[in-house]
Length: 388
Image (cartoon, rainbow, N blue to C red; front, side, top):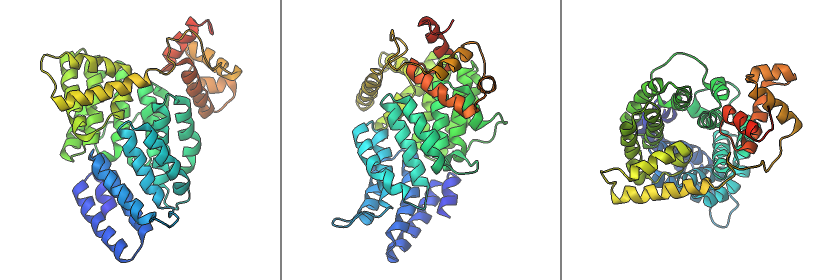
């Protein structure tokens, strides 16, 4: 019942059922089953944007599954995976790495696969945060295949594919997004499909249709607010700010961005902002110079966000004069076809390879060129004389 309530976005009802289940696990002295319950409680805490509560949940699991003087149970991986996610949201990358190092072997040994999938999604985000986009995609597309559900499910149950589509939508990889979300009709916004809708919104912005993105985001924001999912609200507001900026509504963009910063100052989220890229960084700079000042707490948190963004911007970018990691012969073939306007499907046909192989080549091409999308990669390659 708790899981059903969680999937329906009814966090309070889910929490009550999970509390009953946890009491029964403790009475039966079943710490591993208790960790399973804790996995969903932690998901609720994270969705609410309550990083402190999530930290308490995962530390409680750790106490019960890895008591001092005893080897940890595999279920302790649930706790380490969750603590890694909390650390990453706060931009504590070294702490996230330490917890992932502990989580990965333990989660892999579990018969219950969602923690393993979640830890891989967090590892991908961590690699991306450290500038290793190709490594992030490799984790999701190679190791992630073992952990992802065999059949299509809603995004909240498939963190590996959801994170792959999320990265693709932010990077402007339209085909990868469409492969996942499809081109189906609009539906009533719901927590279980939030990742799909956010990906569609970003795709609409990239395609020059911010109005459609705003239509999707309005429903998503109302749904998240009604269910008190503050983490969702932060990310929705960030995408909305980019959509309003694309629609030349600069004042509106700064208004929703202010709301996101104020909320993040309460929750402690940093990495969500960093992941949106330089377009958001420009808006954040404008927000500082707004006539109505931010609160002292929000201004301090904005400083932490911009510091994290500055740290990420030091990785190799498209403005460098040379490629540090040269393209392979096959990558060069793919890049030339991209520059000529061929789609992934057409490239696969031209080169007699699978579409997934084309996508993997594109991931490495983008990383090596320091480009965020196909168009940018082609332009960068022309400037460097790699393609005509």
